Length: 47
Image 1 (cartoon, rainbow, N blue to C red):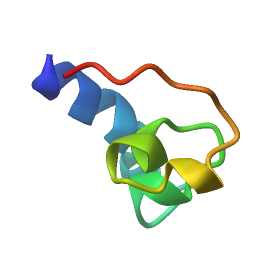
Image 2 (cartoon, rainbow, N blue to C red):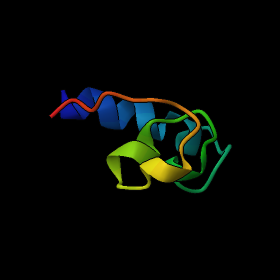
Image 3 (tube, rainbow, N blue to C red):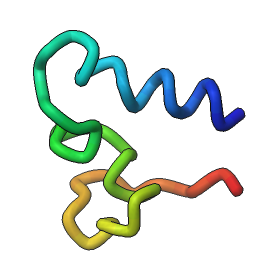
Image 4 (cartoon, helix red, strand yellow):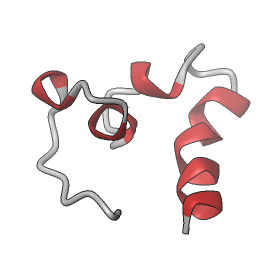
């Protein structure tokens, strides 16, 4: 599961859209990195 989540979070980085996954506006990467207060999305974390 972690491998798939990392793949999804890193797609905008690999595409050159952002420098880090947390910078992508519609990514749940912020939630997983502890920045959930800055996220636009309500996310249920997979543990």
